[in-house]
Amino acid sequence: MRKLALVLLLALIVAGLGFSEDLQIPDQRPQRTNPPPSENQAAPTEYTPLIFSEYPGAFAYWRDTRGPSPIYAGLCFLGGNELYLRFILPSTGAEISFSQTFFVTPAANGRTSRIEPGPVRLITGDLGSEDAIHRLRFEIYEWMQVWLDTRSRFEEFPAYQAGSGGDVEFEYWIPVFQFRSAGLPDKGVSLATVGLALEPFTDPAFNAFAGFSEPKKGPVTKIAAQAEQEVFLDGLSIKLDGNWVYGTDGFYRIGSAKTPLAWITAEGFDLEDAGIGDTFDLIKLLLLYSGPQMIGDSFRVFVYDEYPCIFYMAQDNQTGLVHARYRMFVPREGARLSIVTLCALESVFTLNREYFESLLFGDAR
Image (cartoon, rainbow, N blue to C red; front, side):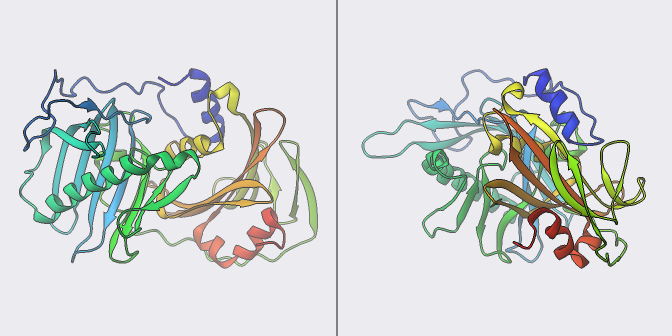
């Protein structure tokens, strides 16, 4: 279980988010003693559990667009070498979910270690009822094998491509096995969203996802730049203008406090106090605890003036509105960071992108 200090510090960063520090695996998880490594294959003479270095309840969904109708596949980490897998075919309403353990055979005689999927505990549906889901399930096992063979690259790079055709992409911040995409953007499998299920078998964050709902249209407002004004957030000098109004909560906003068109703030965070290794680990945690549903294909990491930055879109499940969000991580003394967050309604951001980016990046972007 992560330190209470980490939970409290993350609560300061993710505005309005409420969550429990109890991330234990539900009692209804299947209990196994020395299981065979595969539901269909003979047990190897030796095998060891494949341990996923992950936060309990962390999950990712991917969208398969290669067929006539999209399929969504979700993997949620339960603990140790056990995952909860869920497949949805929205066009028919078909759903298959099950928990499964994973093992690794030892490398020997010039052969690399091989992933051996363990026994399945079926939760909903029929494993053989949908051919497309069946194929996708075993493709995921193949991509897990590519990840196992290449994941040492993360020691040098936060993202890389692999596979026989070099079309399998992995990125460090993605939960479970860092898989982002395979194939072509419009005819392939790509990340849909990530998140955290506090109770993996019941939390709707994981169990109710079936793709994004039709986004609600936001206001279309053109923002005219006004006279520049310098403000200070967490000790950083930021140049805004007369459009922004300061609130008692430390946020500058355009529009009302209840329904802002955009807002900006900066907060301090100490990596050492929180027990977090580096900025990339922090980025991963912030996305897991982000609250709104992150839209996977919008996410990107980049560096501006030696400062790590991220950009992504996220949909609010309650309002249906989509927001665009920048976060810039500015190193301070020791292990301390200032995290600058700029957020705007997607409809407003799209019309005023140059204006918003000039606030963070000047004329450089």
